[in-house]
Image (tube, rainbow, N blue to C red; front, top):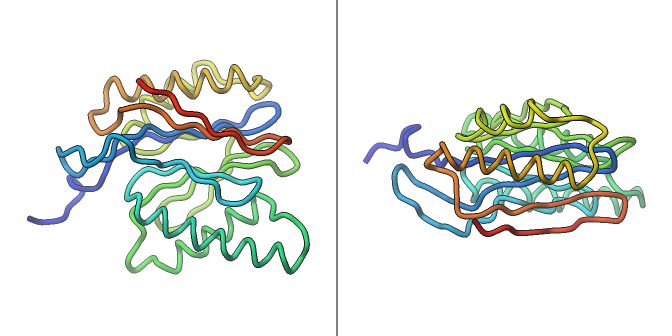
Length: 200
């Protein structure tokens, strides 16, 4: 059996920066072609104490990437005695992904956290870093983006941002066969990180 784009896992992952923080979310289905490998896959990750990430693609690649970034970030924080800012974590992840460019990690990443203001970053498999106020990646990204763009405002409250994230992922689940089986959410604000799960 040839390994081609048909067998690259699909997903829907979303990140939204709101007035006081960032909310990240992804659905739980993991597929390989037309086969559902898992209905409880976790695509939401804590990277540092103030930065989180969600992914679409090969979850194993993302797990290893997050582990490596977390170790380097912790070492840097021990050296400087300061928490790494989200832009520094995004740059670190970018460098590690670019180093693998000849055998790329098959994952798209949305990384989010609190610097001077809430921000999300989109990283492709080669390590490009694009800062934004909201983003979606994966096979359901087009459906999710349409929902977000229709209602997004930078001054949104946590409740509004979370509802928008859930609505966007639900819209993707309705039309993307590779997305489904619930939503995992990571909320990052000045008080820390909170994880939530929604069963669909």
